[in-house]
Image (tube, rainbow, N blue to C red):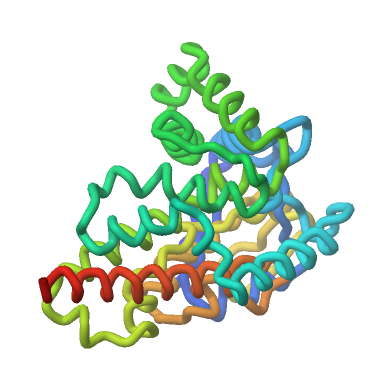
Length: 302
């Protein structure tokens, strides 16, 4: 069900959770990813936070590029091809971080190791020498949270220089590469959340009886929301009021997937903005689960 928040001069947002409505709006070319300042005060503030966090060298990270952005589609296809090949070869098994992730899910290592290990594993899919540690993962967590924290905390992050330092650290570790920055600053948090859920599930009595599909259905983590900006006037059954340029639309992806169980929606598989890492992430999670359960079984047999 859609919810409209409209206070003239302050906020103009449509929030959508129904899977059909999400697909309908996402497919409309009058809605797009855009960080251009427009709309009411809260709209502009939200967009400014996103620009402050995820625009590097004047360019948004890949997940914020508009559908017609130059080179977006070809880069998207190339990334999908590379990651699919990595999934086919289970390339992550060559990375020492893979064992660390397995050990955490199996309950044989502390959960705090998840963040740096996951960040390092993803980073090295793009840069062989990517180095992750507690400092780089803490920076990624703060940067990812920055657009959603309260106004006072965001102001303090800017005034103290914390936001600048976090961005600089992540930029240097990624050597300025946008794909690496996206993977290690944004995408990593969904992987970590899924692995935390798997660790909890692995410790239950029912774990060994669950299929991989059931595990993924329970543990898969997706972005809370996808942001779209209205570029041209739009009348839609999703909103009682006509949408106008500058209005924002929040596609509440996580809530929709939780309520519907629609895994294809989790990766926006039939969308122009589909996640190119779908096959890679699902295969990685399935492999970690299989290895973790085998490790737990071996431990119990000793």
